Amino acid sequence: MKVHGRWRELFERVLVKYLDGNVRDEKGKVTHPEYPQFWYRRIVEDEGERVRVRRLKGEPETPQKPPEQGACPPCEQRR
Image (cartoon, rainbow, N blue to C red; front, top):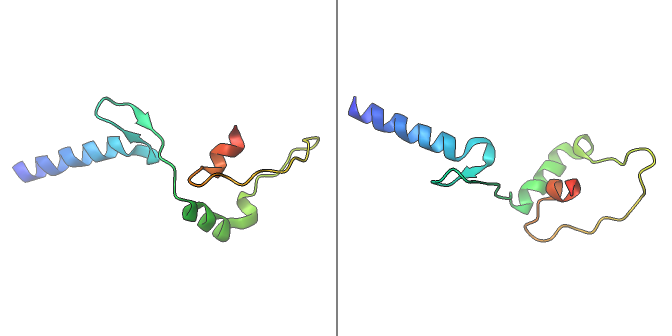
């Protein structure tokens, strides 16, 4: 029973700490670690047009600069 309790405690700690890809520290502060660039490229390779961000009607056509190394392309597009 003691082992089961320790496993359950570990599960709860890990679940809360890494919930939804965000990381909580011991004080509960949430950080949003970025995914590596290869992960974003893989998503584009697998999903392509389905995840493409399209301009809205009337939105100006402006060239986008490539993301910085380690930058989060979806986050950059929301800024």
